Amino acid sequence: MLLNAVMLAVPVVFLIASAILCVKAFEHGKSRKNTVLTQICSFAAVFALCFICPIVASAATGDATSITESTAFADGLAYIGAALATGLSCIGGGIAVGNAAPAAIGATSEDPKAFGKAIIFVVLGEGIAIYGMLVSILLIFAR
Image (tube, rainbow, N blue to C red; front, side, top):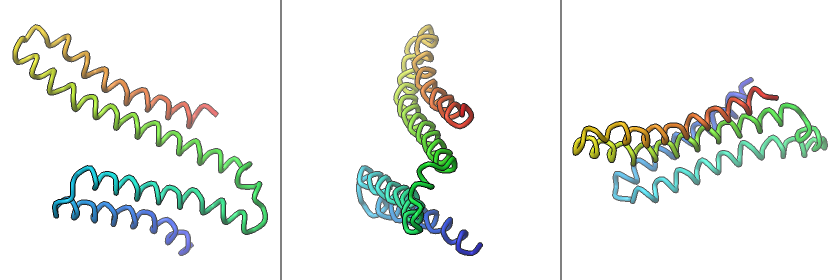
């Protein structure tokens, strides 16, 4: 029981520590691009560690086919796919809305009749996140 709690706490502590270090590095003059790349690399390292450790543990016991053919492994991959679909689509939607909304506000302030046309572009950006969420729901529940 204690070992499971420690194994769950290690990735969380590592990710929190890397986020704190990236914020401190940004405050001390490191560029935003470098801090984001550092954060992405630390996430990829934790992801690889959490993904590979169960496979290595099953290989050490001599039952390597059980982890790849089990339904728990397939469920785990479905959850990872759902998380990636939602996360990446929300990031893309946020970038789209972040660029389209100020332009829509500027166009509306110049010509109030342009509101209907301008809001459509903002809604299209939000639609990306909704599509990602729908893909996630399909991945989780359609098996």
